[in-house]
Length: 395
Length: 133
Image (cartoon, rainbow over all chains, first blue to last red; front, top):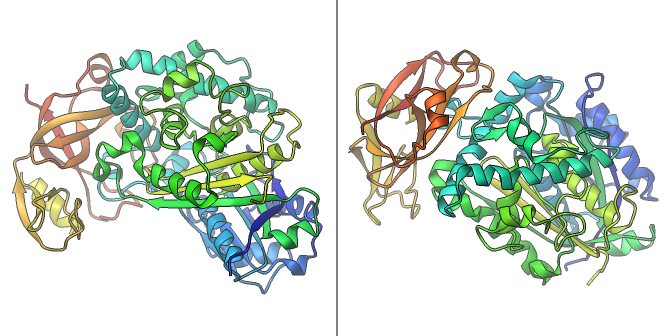
């Protein structure tokens, strides 16, 4: 029998630099915030779904399920480590959601942690590149900024937008997300770059042409945690459960195997459609979106593939203000990956943290009248895609 | 399998597989057809010619590649339809100044030192694209 599923407490560390903590120690901080706002007993948690991307490389740490469980006082219960690159904790979340929905568990902990800032840029860049095709893409020295630089040029050609014009349009994503990130006390760039200008983005250091430093999200240390349970369990314990209305997931291979599909982010379209179908919703029912803006161009193609704008119109939309907090569909009002930071394995459940807090009216730095939110997390060059729809309404 | 691809490339041959069910050419080779997923494949040699569909001059490299910056990574659409990733043998400045999309290229292999995470522990071969027009 299928059960409705709801989110109880959520937690997130400050994003940025945490060289003084291990991955389990960092995760514990996020978990305690989530647990302390869930009104449950420790023994209510039946399993742990933990997302981490490259603990082996950054901290020499694998087999993290057990170490996480032990760190937070839950030794003994099943504890899984999920890896789907930048979507690691979103994959964990969807599996956790399915387990609760289908009666395997009643209450579980989901989350993630990553320490890419502390690893330093050269190791961090190499670690991130492990999410690309190891034999046929990485050998050329392709990086993640490189992937989205390639996609930016493909986008410009596909929609016949001069490259310099496109650079200006997508720079608005950075301006917008830094504005909100500067307002978010948990963001890596809190109180920084809040009045960034388009010219600042265009004139910052070139990373992979045509993308500059401000087109890119930063390297980040951070953790996030979410406790989910059956809706009946949740409503007995907290006042404002946020209901998980649908979750979609999709996969693809290397960038070059996907050919022109990358411009339309077809794996994301599949994943989003799966989530909309389960929720019985369309993009018009969504009030706010937390999407995977690892790079400025990435947010643009995400908003198109998720159905908010026609293909080829996403860059115009951000320039016209349609994705700002007071726009038609606010996108990343928590700062997104660009302004808030991107602790890869923690990013998916950090999006859920922001979505849940916003729907409860608990994001103190920004208020948006919203009842339904969608999250969107991308792993690799579209290799792993997850979308989650959350609502204040159970049905 | 991937080692055969790069060994052939160093001998001047670009190899792939052709699907006997749908005719799709998959390059570099994969265990199944990139179009229909069939295992009914035959090994073929491609022309090694194609055109640039996208590229990026890379200024910040991963550990193990830092000595090579700046370099220009490109995607080429081969005349047989497959896309492959490699490097354009033009300098970064030229790549940033001109629009190289659509330029005709020929593929050849170049050997670089391997690095600790690369699956081939002896060497790292990069498909290089020489502009021919």
